Image 1: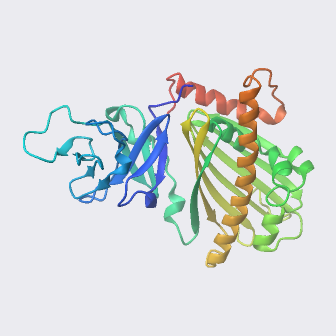
Image 2 (image 1 turned 180 degrees about the vertical axis):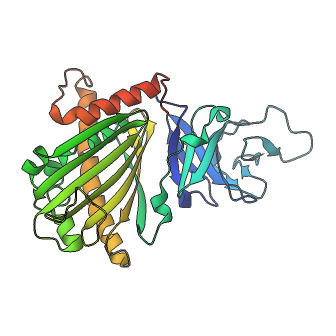
Image 3 (image 1 turned 30 degrees about the horizontal axis):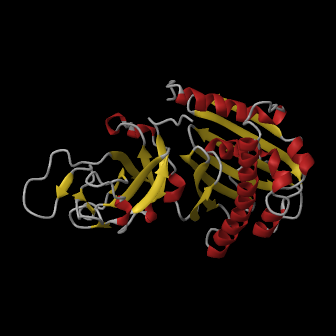
Amino acid sequence: MQFPLNTWYMAAWAHEVGDAPLARTICNEQIVLFRDRATGLAAALQDRCCHRGAPLRLGEVTDRGLRCGYHGVTYDCSGSCVHVPGPGKIPSKLKVRNFAVEERDEVVWIWMGEPAQADHSKILAYPYHGDTKKWPHKKHMHKVAANYMLLIENLMDLTHLAFVHKSTIGGNPQAHTDAKMTVVPKDTGLHFIRWLPNSAPPATYSKAVGITANVDRWMEFEYFAPGNVVQWTGALETGRGAEENRDQSGGFSLRILHSLTPETEHSSLYFWSISNGYRQEDPDATEQIFQEVNTAFQEDKAMVEAQQSTLLSTGGEEGLVNIVSDVARVHMRRALQRLIDGGNLT
């Protein structure tokens, strides 16, 4: 399977990269991340010492750099060897591949192509992580035994909420079927918004803010190829003019960053953060919505892993048929294919 390489993927949450080497597999590449002691900057190298092929993840971070745990060969952030135990010169070929990385908005991003081609202007901005007063948040990552495109597709067709998430964020199936949806393809991916007017609030919303009356509910998603989805979801009691002004107090509101990083053809790293837009002064509110959404994501994980297993055993996607709710998914696939083919995603 082809993975877009000249693009940015989330490699880790910033707090994960610290004093110990952190191993990750991204696009079938074994990578080790660490933080330079002198500068505090994150770095990423191929997880393979070029001396005898030992995994660098079994080494340790020193004042000089990342030291291999087998024979003590040490590499700096660029992958250049800076120390070999014993006398003599360091061989000029003693170097491991490095990857361009940048840390922004509590995220460590990695460019999987040639570092010289890394375009730092293309890194997704997510300023809500910096506004902890209005958007207190909590972050997580779990591994999923499924291709990352299946996880993105799961976010593109939200009619599944009524069936997979009945006890949490689902709500009435008919309301999802009748939702008003606008899809706008973009050079970077696509944008869509769904409105469920005058619908019963799902259990998660009622638990969070005590809404019992019908609500006007929205789900706004923007997909940035290849693997990022930015979500704003919320609800206001019907009659408060939500479609004209969603940014009102007293309702339910949350933002989610979904970042899907391909690990292998059949496994993914699912990074996500939940930002609470109500009862912001109450830490319990953020923890509660985190647990609710985590429950829903575990339901997604079970379904998509089962889907992946079925596709592998039945010949892949051949013979699958699109229905009306696939409109956003179809545009998502086109945007991703343009990136794979080297098209101009700006």
